[in-house]
Every structure is written in C-alpha cells, then in structure tokens.
Amino acid sequence: MMNLMDKAQERMPNTPLLVNVIARRVRQLNSGQRPMVKPEGQFTSNFELALRELAEGKLAAETAVTTTATQQPSAAESLLSL
Image (cartoon, rainbow, N blue to C red):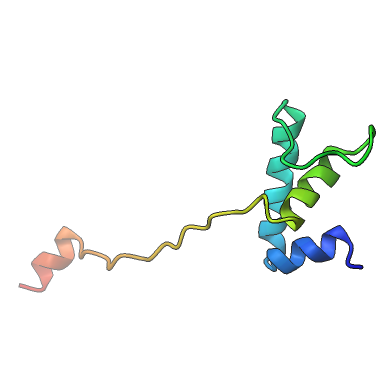
C-alpha cells in the first residue's frame, strides 16, 4: 500500500507546488477551517489531514500560465527608427 506522500506526489508531481499547497492548507486548518476528510483519530495533525485531502483528490491547485507580451519600443527607440 502506498503511503500518503507517494499518493500526493502521484496527484501533484511538481514538488515545490505540492509543498506550497500543503503548507497553505495547513495554515487554513490551523486558522479554523474544517477538514474535507474525517480525522482518523483524536490526535491527527493538520499536516496529515492536508496530505490526506490531496492524496484523496479533495484538494487541488490551479496554476496560471503567463505569457510574455512583446515589448513595445520606448519613445527614444521609436524616434530613432524614423
């Protein structure tokens, strides 16, 4: 049986993103948000809850793709090309 970290990495192979998503979710749980999975015991840590949420597919991340726009020439460059 795969452990939670292996399952989470299978769902989110980008390790830096995985760390950031888990850290953000742990902060949310620490501030009082309810977990999306049932705790397995009385002393289940928020880290384990966040990892289980991701491993079970209840937690995901959206990434934005940014494209670089073509740079506009400065006023001085425009004048030089005339």
